[in-house]
Amino acid sequence: MPGMMEETMGARFPEGLSAAAVLLGATERIKTLTYILVLPLRNPLMLAKQISTVDFLTGGRFTLGTAVGHMEPEFDVMGVSFKERGKIADESLEVMKECWTKDRPTFDGPYTKFDDIAFEPKPVQKPHPQIFIGGNSKPAMRRAAKYGNGWIPWLITAAELPASIEYLRSQPGFAEKEDTFEIIMPTTAYQIEDYSHAETGETKIEGDRDGVLRDIETLQKAGMTGAQVMPPQLEKFEQCLEWIAWFDSEIIPNFQ
Image (cartoon, rainbow, N blue to C red; front, side, top):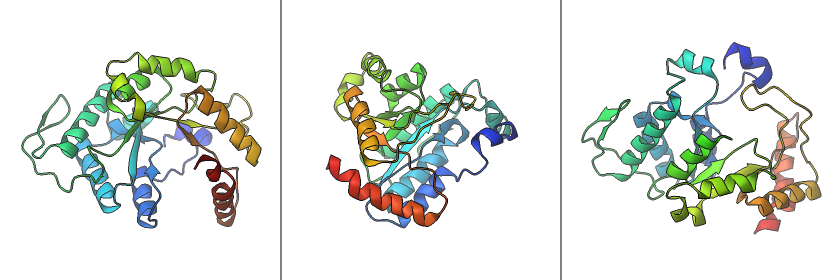
């Protein structure tokens, strides 16, 4: 975390893939989604191996949520070109799909080159683990339409969502995947600027059953296929468990 962003965003961010592996190893049925793994900061060949291993060992319960990133100082620390992050991300997605789907993966790109390698185990999910692309911009939507199985914005409102879906539909090849394409929306309307994360107002988190269901229904009507529901601010671990139990009994049964 760049020091300049610590006050706004906080310093404590567990690494997504490691956290997902621990959670999947401690459970039997739940699936995990990294929200968001910054793709250009990773070696795509190693990342493909890590994801394939996690998916194989957990019976196909991992979903990759990924994006190009937006904090230039973070890229400077990692020694990665911020200006080229979109091109790096696109190539990385191609590299990983090559590794996950081909018997003898081979790749020759501007950033990654390898030839005739063995790559096992393959992921359980076929043809590969689901890929959800994050971001609120049109480039993010184009990347989701081309490479992804879903789109996970976080600052698109219910009012803006129908126009965004129409833009996705206008992209080449999207029609072939539209029936299974996921659009995961947060029910919380964050009062935050996209890149600076500066607060523009008070973010209200709905905590009662009717409020949560009302927000989900509004987004469903706008075209959302899945919801990310933010828990209220809690102080103790036991309170988190209580909230999960409440969510299981009061919210989930409405969608089964």
